[in-house]
Every structure is written in C-alpha cells, then in structure tokens.
Image 1: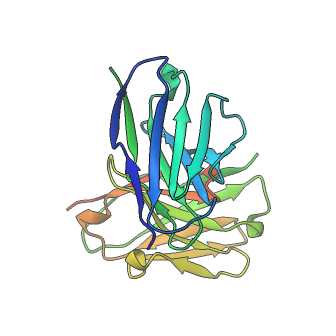
Image 2: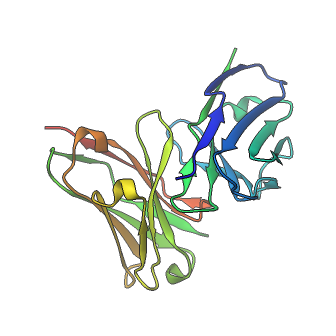
Length: 107
Length: 113
C-alpha cells in the first residue's frame, strides 16, 4: 500500500499566519492527491483536488502544490474558520490511503 | 442537490453485526461509485472500499475484507455496509462518500456490552 506521511501532526497557529502542511508519498502518485478539511463532528470537505486545484467554493487563500513526492497544502493569512483538521489522500492506486492528519490549534 | 443520508448511530454488542445505510438523492445513483471510510475517534481516515452501484462490483481494502460487506439496493438508491464480528476496534464513525466530493453525515458505531 502507498503510505502518505503527513506532517506536522499538530500545529499551533495564530490568525494571519501562513500555514503549510505536507504529505510525502511512499511511491509515485502523480497528481492524484486531494486535501480535506474536517471540523469537529463534521464530515470531511474537499479543499484541493489533483494536487493543485481549488475545489468549488474554497477560498483563494488555500492552495496546493507538489514537489516530487511531496504534496503541500498552504493556507495564507489564516482565518478563524480555517482552524480544523486537515487530511491528504492519494487516489492514484487502490487501496486509497490517507495521511495521518494535521490538527491546527490557535495559540 | 446531491445528498447522502446515513442511518443513525448504533450501539451493538461484541460479536454482533451491524448494517449501515447511505441513501443517495439528487443524482443518478448508478452513475457513481460509493466509497466507505472509517474514522476512529480523533484519528485519521481509513478507506474501507467502494461499490459500483450499477454492477455491484466491489473493491475492498485488504484490511477490511473479512470485516465489511458492501451492497446496494438500486430500487431505493441506497448503499449498505455490513460490519461483522464486531469488536471494540470497530467503534468508530463511518462515512459514505461519492468521490470524496459529497459525504454522508457519518454514523457512529459503538461496540460495547
């Protein structure tokens, strides 16, 4: 199975910060990485698809990038509504595999 | 609008089975796979498998092959996941999702005597 190693597992942040979360894939998954946001008690929400594409309705302060086997989600100028858990997912191969998740917490 | 409505929370005894439902509306049910995802409390997401509602073809994560059984009822646009021989390790929230874009609200399964 493809491993998605996500870092950091948690992050203490301040409003207005630029935040970057990274997933490293254990083998080539091409562009087939999604990023999800999840708030407590809620279902995941797709934020980024195919590594770099902003999903419908997602604010432009969110962006996705790829460098080799490293995939990153960046949130520019963090707002309070962005404080949540974030998960990456590879969907190049089955079984689909998620990263371990990143929890953003306000300082 | 696309909606996936999951059945309510379940409290089940160890060793028993439970069948979760996911009723789809707002689109042609047979046009899209339904995937199931497990989230243990406060932890990461795990992909269980998917079913093609048109053909009934299933693809399981090896880890869940002896645990989960995916089926559909095309007459009611409903996907089901049955979990068998439940243990405390199966206590979690389970989601159905269409392509990672549309998600059910999740159902919490608690395994306890």
